[in-house]
Image (cartoon, rainbow, N blue to C red; front, side, top):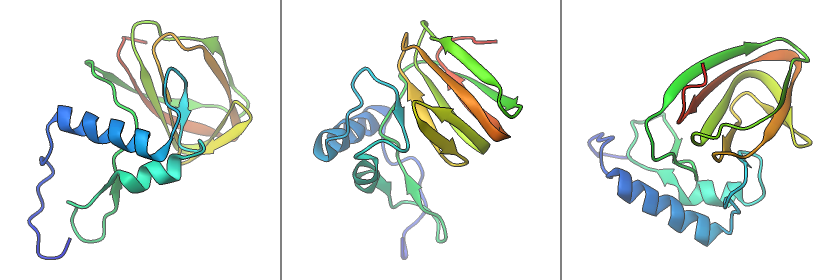
Length: 145
């Protein structure tokens, strides 16, 4: 970002959505109606296409290949080692989970600090917390309190 003025507000929401849909199409990433995680095949290529260059020196930024077009509520969960979230769905809207510390096991994969998952509305899922516990930040288009 040499000699550019930092402006985090370059794109409208709609322009951002178009950027996401173009990158999904070009990368071949499968996001339609399924839970998407940072470890999915094709994710690396999609993130390359979604690199953002309007950041201050020393920062690197990617737009993620998912979006929620709804009001959201934010939560933080601290989970004990081995805790299990049983099979469930959030029917009122999609959700996004970010692993801040520790890990969870979902669908045969371990998601660790820095990984994330996007869950479409009504899609059932479950997970188990890893051996060190986890701190998970999440937002949903519903009140899941």
